[in-house]
Structure formats: structure tokens, C-alpha cells
Amino acid sequence: MAAPGRQRLMRILITGVCGFVGSTLAECLLERVEGLRITGMDNLMRPGTETNRARMEHLGVEFIHGDLRSASDVASLPACDWVIDAAANPSVLAGLSGAGSSRRLFEHNLAALGNVLEYCREHKAGLLLLSSSRVYSIPALCDIPLQVRNQAFAVDSASPLPRGLSADGIGVDFSTAAPVSLYGATKLASETMALEYGAAFDFPVWITRCGVLAGAGQFGTPSQGIFAYWVNAHLRRRPLRYIGFNGSGFQARDAFHPRDLARLLLAQTRTARSSGQRVYTAGGGPANTMSLTQLTDWSDQQFGQHAPVPDPAMRMYDIPWVAMDNTDAALDFDWRIESPLSAILEEIAQHARSHPDWLEISHV
Ligand SMILES: NC(=O)c1ccc[n+]([C@@H]2O[C@H](COP(=O)([O-])OP(=O)(O)OC[C@H]3O[C@@H](n4cnc5c(N)ncnc54)[C@H](O)[C@@H]3O)[C@@H](O)[C@H]2O)c1
Image (tube, rainbow, N blue to C red; front, side):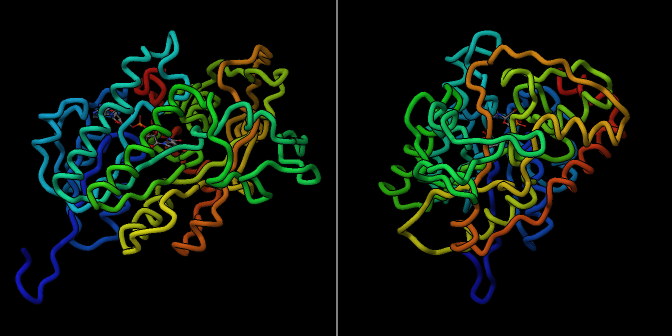
């Protein structure tokens, strides 16, 4: 217990601390919160994440090499006030043949969460769960009325829109009916388990369904971290493909920076409310949405022309358009994104130029 008159310093556990989001959150939170102590666990399974270990230790993060699937690894962690759960296999293709086994996906993304929830129960630690836009129904996402604007799919607001969708993007009430992808299902089940544990054992749980997170240092691949992958691959003249959607490249995603997510998570830790809305959507929103064709145009201007090859065959779980609605997060946490997509892309390009072997490090 803290001595009278002295505030006890906040302590946060970040799972997946050497991943792109976990490491960026650690850095941003340490910049923002005086005296904050961070413990981080990672099994370094994602290629490239070992490059963040020294960086984290240099920042003063107490790094523990361990696996969240192991109850005894998690039990060895020191008590913390909050857990940011940023460990997962985050690819929408995870669990499908060629992208790792479904059992591994289940163990890393869902069974491991059981150990994290037991940790929260034991230490009465609050949980900040990073969920995903992938919890939404794929047929419902594919049925969104769209039009093509400036070589990108965009919502056709003149048509009737389904529940949970407005001109501001996709909100929490949009359909989560299966199928949502194996990855999405692990996230949706994680949300349910987290809320249930929080209610049963009286610890706070905040869930943020994130749109695409992007920035420098992301270990992008063709199936995850698309903005970083595309910019690096374009610069290094790797073959690029417009998969599905008639090979148009019009599929569009919103993107935001983990720096902005860090401010939202901090606001959540500072909100004492114990009932009411616990699940929020957060992302770049319609204003920070870009199609692959637009991303190629942007990259052409930076690095010279490099044309992707159309590959019209649809890939499983592909969807044409996603942008998250930030209205609830703005109302309840006074939260808005500060990094526009242009700044995020410039940051990625700068990092790509100074890391010529980034795709090899990321095992692409
Ligand atoms: N990047 C995005 O666009 C995005 C969007 C929505 C949600 N999310 C969520 O944010 C979180 C972080 O994503 P990211 O982009 O940083 O991914 P990442 O792959 O860069 O980081 C995940 C980290 O978790 C670690 N990890 C995985 N399983 C583990 C285990 N069993 N034990 C210990 N460590 C383990 C990996 O080694 C890696 O360092 C994930 O939960 C993801 O689902 C990401």
C-alpha cells in the first residue's frame, strides 16, 4: 500500500508487448504517464518481434519471455492494475490451411485469454481488450450498399443502411452473426468471456473493436498489416496483387495509429463508471479510408511507378469496405484521432526507406 499522501504509481501489463501494437502502446504510454511501470510478456512467435525486445528493455519495460498459453507463465507475472491484451495471431486468414492450424489459432487467441482472465480475477486488474472489426458478419459486410468513388468502394448513403451502419461508419450494433472468420470468432468469443469474467469477479473490462492499425515498424504481410506491407513491397519492387473484386483494387479500409489508440485506452482506465456501455468501435473512420488502388497511386508518387497485377479470384473472408464509427468513443471519452492517414503513410514510408530488409525481417 502507498504511504499516506503519496499516490501509488500505475502498473500495466501488456501482453504481446513486442508486437507492433503492444510495443507502440508501451512507448506512447510511457511518454504520457509519469511514473508508469510496464511489464510485458511475449513469446516472440511473430517473425520480427525479437527486434523489439531490446527496444522495450531500453525503455524500461520489464520484459518477460513467456507464453500466455502456459498457466504457470502467466501465474509468474507480477501484480498490475491494468492488462492491455495485445497478444494474438491477428491475421484474418489464421487457422486456414497454409496459414497455421486452427488449433493453434484457438490456443493463442482464445485459450490463452483464459489465463489472462484468471490473472485479472486474482489481481483484480482491469482489462483493456483489443478486439477487431473482424467480429462483424461477413455476409452482412458484403451486403453493405456501395458505390465506387475515386477508385474506392464507399458506402452508398442514398440506399437504406443496415442496423449499426451510418455515414460515420460501422458501430457496435452492426451484425456479428456467423460467419465472421475463425480469427473474428476468437475475438468475439474473447469479448464475451472478458465481459462475463469482469461481471462475475468485479474487475473493469473495456473492449475496443479496432479498425486497421497502421504505422512504422509494423510487420506487414499480404494478409495482415496491409498498409505497411503494401508500402514496403512497392518500394522494394515486390510483386503486388489486387486480389478479388474483379482485380479492381477498390477494396477499402480505414486506418489509425496505435498512438491514438493509447489515448483512448488511457481515457478508459480513468473512467470509473462500472455499468453501461463496455464495447466501443475505434478506427480511422471514413475520412481515413483508402483503397488499394489509391494506396498504389500514393506509393507511385513516392517511389515511382510499380503496377500490381489483377487477380480476380476471391479469397476467403475478403470484404470490400470497412470503416469504424468513432461517435461513441468521442461522446464517452472525448476521444478523436489525431494522426491522419497521410501522416501514417509518410511514417511508414520513412521507416521502409531506412529499413531495406524489413520484408525479410517480417518473413515475407
Ligand atoms: N494490427 C491491426 O490492424 C489490428 C486491428 C484490430 C485488432 N488488432 C489486435 O491488436 C493486437 C495486436 O496486434 P498486432 O498488429 O500488434 O499483432 P502482432 O502480431 O504484431 O503482435 C502480437 C504479439 O503477440 C505475441 N503473441 C502471440 N501469441 C502469444 C502467446 N501465446 N504468448 C505470448 N505472446 C504471444 C506475438 O509474438 C506478437 O509479438 C491483437 O490482439 C490483434 O488482434 C490488431
